[in-house]
Image (cartoon, rainbow, N blue to C red; front, side):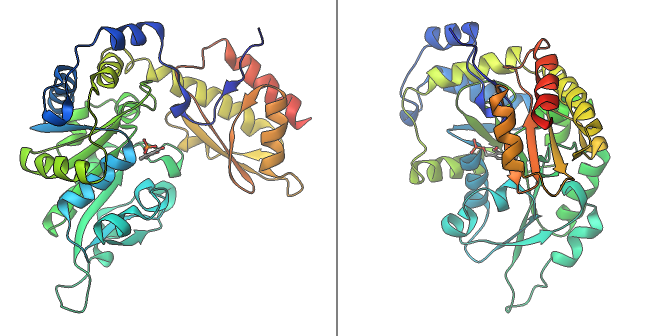
Length: 345
Ligand SMILES: Cc1ncc(COP(=O)(O)O)c(C=O)c1O
């Protein structure tokens, strides 16, 4: 049997482990559209309480969680303030416009982080000529910025300004647990500053499918209506919710290992002549490397690494990304290091 490649394309590639599969098989199930899947209900209660909020809704994907937050809390014509690198703007197929009729006002600050004063100029005056500024989206960790972590005082400052200016605050917390482990804060500490939060179970936490939208009861009831409209209401979804419960119980603390592996390999790749990495931005489970040799295309680096059984993504013509997760164990570090050296040679 050949060994499978080491897959660093994303933390979404993980396979459920044997104990996670056992938890899925053992889960009591019901019809979640009728509201009686006990495992889905248990997951929703668990994640709402972990984030210190009233209610939660289990949904198929992070994209759906973000888009429900937008649909449930905006009206057509509203404007959303977000970073130009944010997932909700850049990687969700223009869904905010298509599904909610919203446009964006964008920030272009380094690493996807910003300050309260960066928000103000994007807020439209209350005047009938303008779109109404309705929502601020913060992403933590900030994938497009290299997986960087928002510190608690930064979160407090930007959300406080947004609140004063009358904006709804949504946190795209697809990797909130990575942020918490790296930033040394509890999920509820970060969540307290937001009206709604989306989290993903299928990224660093290692579940095969699923995300949640968390907020107050009224907003989550509205989101449930739109989940049905968007085709995201599932039936015996407890089989998936069981994996998410297992992930919350077992896979949070171990995220620190992924962060350490990302740092080790990033340092090593940064030492190779053709690559440059913003090392201080390597704060969680990923790194982006710029290729400084103009004769070397990112796609060739991807191909050369693939021949060494290591899979990564080219995220721009001269940029690559590697993401670490529970499918990569400590013994892989040497293999990955060797693959990068050989591929470059
Ligand atoms: C920051 C962020 N938000 C949302 C999503 C969307 O998640 P999904 O792929 O489950 O739709 C992703 C996916 O990678 C992400 O990185």
